[in-house]
Image (cartoon, rainbow, N blue to C red; front, side):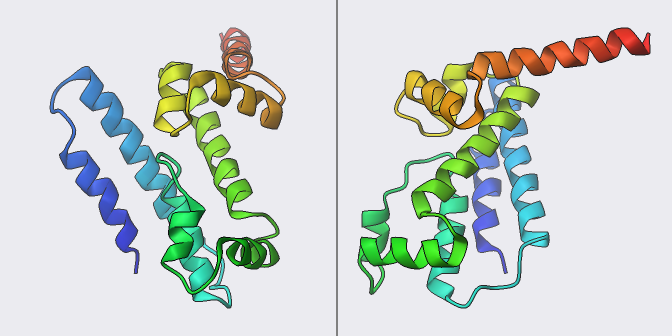
Length: 164
């Protein structure tokens, strides 16, 4: 039922073996796979329009690559504007807003649980550059990516001191 999960396995096979970069990328791909599996298991009942479900699945799998709704719309019987209206009525946000919220969700995870630089995270999430990513992240989350990561690490250190 979930053919899009195959992409994760194929990506794992292409990674360099027994290298630090390969291990880091492998961990990241595995994390994406687990996130997507979790989403598949707890997904909501199917929506009324299969084309909108398909668009949502494509958006979910486009977190780490560029997505162009105009190209997608050419493969459907609807215009780009009509797809936006349908998607908004079904999910209460536009496809762009949905995709960007997924990217921000992934960015928070990467900032908190990986050692990737902000530039690497921006590249991984297919932002045009790290400055656009940083500005967008700050606009959506209220803190710059650096401050977001530092605030989390600061909280962890405080907990460690209390535990000892």
